[in-house]
Length: 351
Image (cartoon, rainbow, N blue to C red; front, side, top):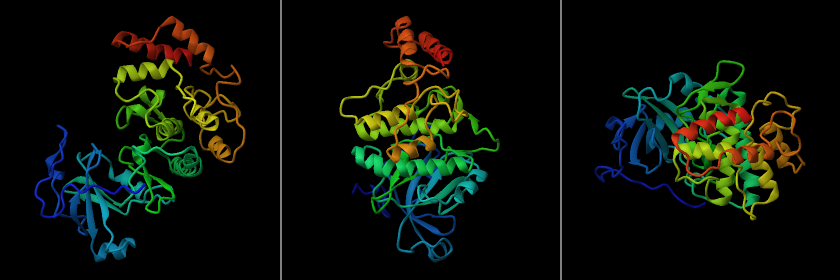
């Protein structure tokens, strides 16, 4: 985990070589040499895979150092969103108050010419994207830290909506993971913790209910399960080079495939986190419910837990028998738009 950030445009190097998306706003793409939020001097543009924002490296001035208790000699990361309405000030204000060892701290926030802007710590070890870890590293570091972070976020009324390896940052000492990238998070005002939205997520890690527009706390845990699969295996269960229709269809009717090198404990964890049926989410006594922090904390302690859907047909779960019965009715190859819609309807029927 000794990779370093790649500098694209240090001071004096001229224009950046970044390829802009068609919907990007050039107003935030060339800020090297600019001071943002009055106290952060941008010195370089960073090569990242953030489509929603331009990412820079900056040096804080004396005032920022004293106000936010950061070193004047340590660079910080500046994230300037490409859309003026990308994230509300209400969300930024609430996120800036989050304090957890498993959540990346927002050092400062505000606007640059009307574009939302946040200041973050620099992570020299980058994220878990593209990294493969051992089962022991996943069990002892990744799972406890991410679960702690999700538990804290949800207790604050926040659903992340984009949990994936690229949003799990390795701390500079290499010993912990922190969750980052709350630009598409939602601050919840109601007690049932449900967000209705179609925007701001990465399809490969998205829960079935989220693909249908409903976000609940359990949706973040599903994304964690897919992320753990990738961190161990090197790819997501159904691959990334498929269309949205193919992905949704395969997710609806196919079990996650596990190869022989997966430890049984990791298989059980991923199965628990990616259980499709969320109809029992509020019934804590029902074993046929998607795992959240309660079950995962027990898993981390080595306790034996029933895997949802494998020990009882009660509770409306999508059992292996039901899945095979559906597959016998509709053989999955390469879905068309017509049978893709049929799959989505059938998925809700089976649940």
